[in-house]
Image (cartoon, rainbow, N blue to C red; front, side):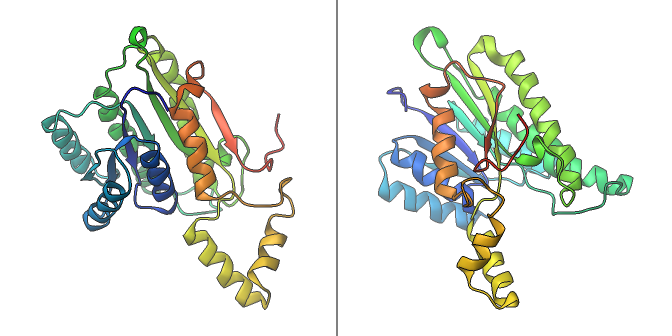
Length: 264
């Protein structure tokens, strides 16, 4: 990372991927502002990071799906006079569905929870960024998405739409904010072996009368690297996109899928 002290907002900080991202960024010497819904988990994570790294870490609880909660987050951020050098945005995912035509009310719920609400929080984060490219200070935003951003997946009908919306928003923001030295890139994940997905895989293996390793081999047979990603590998990619590595990169969608996506 840059030698300039950095403060990075990480949303979804207490989730399977969020934890890996936080620990990696903290080990690199960054100061983190942790955000998630559960205040107790945030407080515990903040204490763990503070005891194991040199950065100054803090937290603010927020529910990105609720406008009122995002407004409270904005007020608290302003009250603390926080300047952000980066943000990792992990919008809530809509559960898998094969329904391509949900009701209007369902669409409003999905859009609010997975796009409009998180985008409102990102707007708050951008307002707290004060990059100065002339002095080597840039701000980096990484939006965590999924591979349905580049190819349709039948069992992720709603996510196909939402993730394409994030792709377009990231590209739009990259054009709008580039002259300020704010970079916006998306990281689209394929299969990732989070603790939650590992537990689900173990359950499916037991139900099928096979071992975890056998089930994993079957599921990854169509992935060129023959494996799923890990939260730690995702964290390494996020760190790269927040670092000087991306100083001439913005508006990109990086696939983190082991080669699964066939599109050029």
